[in-house]
Length: 623
Image 1 (tube, rainbow, N blue to C red):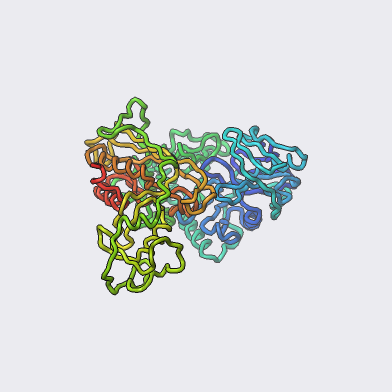
Image 2 (cartoon, rainbow, N blue to C red; image 1 turned 90 degrees about the vertical axis):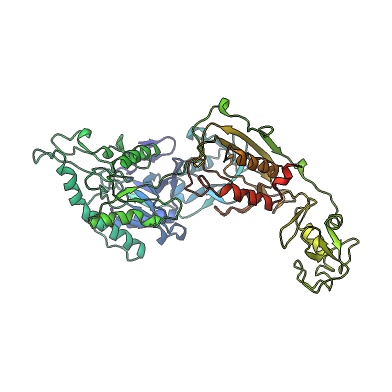
């Protein structure tokens, strides 16, 4: 079956093959979470092809050719990519293109992402762009491929036709993809048999090889157990062909006695050769995962059905090992959970492989009529704009407002400049000050800590300049502290659902929405774009007296621009992006798998303490 407008030959199960004696360029691709086939680089494809020539059912260790792909391996028999540190599996496929196309010439088309780095287009789009470029078309409309983008070759830019956002694009030369002549084996899956190649001696290959050997050792015994309880073929002419689709050489992971595959469901085709095939009703329920001839292990809907069936079939007393540990806090390493289960089965121990539960991030769908205002809280929405900034206050006036001069100076260090208080400030000669001498010392009114007045001026100039001071020793705040949160919107309302641990109360839902924009002088990189990932962000509080008090304080913190700031994400490492600003929120509605949900009996007190540290306390609500 050919992809439209791409000149790509793809077979029904993802294993493309060219006609006999026809030269084609080979591109290996993997399926991402958005359902798009993403190409591996040319060097990786050359490596996969080399392994394929030696052993058509072997394992490809991608880290041998690209260090960034060190966690990944490809099992050629199941046609899946396996990530060893998380256990994540993704389908892969082998596609063919004309030698005169972009991959055959080593041409790569890329677009500039929000981080300022370059991302290659999908291969079918790359081929289409290159064809238009070679024909000297001034522009190219990608709507025929399902994308609302317009490519302008004169300005080398991509424009979103809906949002009118423009991104730069570029064309660069790289290594040409591998060329093949003839056809691969005619069967739609790789042959299952004895390996003809020698295994690699690296640790990754040894691990995979040993695991595969253990799984193959179980194959015969588990088949006998499964078919001993079913009706076997009545004569020798009837055959049943079982085609597995998992990472480890097709070994079925059936738990003894249940006849059900948990989490790693297999797909079967019954009835090859002559004779009468078994009907699906004769087979265990978890074996019906082949739809239209395709393996559906990685389809989200299929996973939900198979997992639900599997959980119901787990016998009592059988341990369950998570294939992917979401929290990373379990006793079994995520990458070895599945392998451990296989080896335990080989030793005769009962094991059911399951997937770790997914966090419940959002409540069930809610009608707008069911969203009610929060009792005791005015309004349902707050906005912050640049006009909320408080600027223009003289630093010397701010320092004088919160300090008193000291006549008898103690012989101790100034913890800002680390010079003795009896000597001049370390900023003497470095700071252009007005009316404040370098030897003057002041004491903060509330806490009594003492510093050079010039050091306090320098500290103020290096901060937000909002008219407030914060003691560097005890963090006491003088005045009203404000932050550098970008403009955005905060909404809050009550929904008719309860949080775990607060079943007697409804739930307050907070929705934050901040768009991407340009950094100003108060931000780390003025004039540079900042990103805003994951918005709108939904957060949850119990609708009780304490939850409403926390909400009122969060509203005050929002008005003071303290909830978010611009910095580097601690989870993704991305810089110049909107991040939380030391006030924790609960973003998981119905569980606490990530640590950001309920039940958490200490959360309310912890968030009140965090708000107080930002100068937002209960006494402020009375003012």
